[in-house]
Image (cartoon, rainbow, N blue to C red; front, side):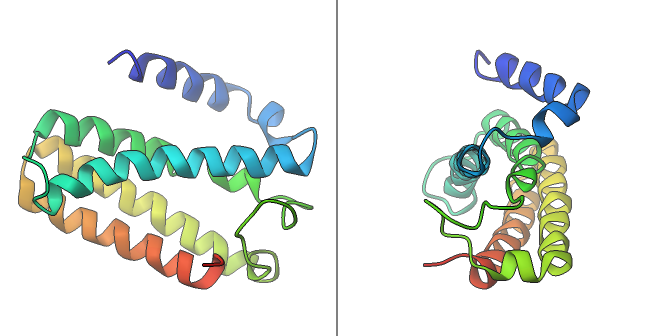
Length: 150
């Protein structure tokens, strides 16, 4: 719970001042931002996955909290793919910038599936979580296959 309060404040602050966050001092800052968002999302997605795959016991509260964080984080990294962020410490493929409409479709699909995962987790039904988890995972994989270096 201690983690959720600062996260909620950061999300609220970010949503209230998007122009401030749409600008980064340097392209490297944008790359760090998007990587951090993906890292947090992956960590919480992994927690849900461990339950969905039976590696740890299902805990409805933890699944709901982690899924809510996945949903929130799924909205954040995209502004970090601006001009000049295709270089440096990144595994992003050039196709992101040459296929921007298709890349945005993938981002939108991830956000939609993450919302479904969060809703499923709130029900406390493990089977619903498993189904939604699989859909998010497929969406992540499709984007990684098309737009990320191995």
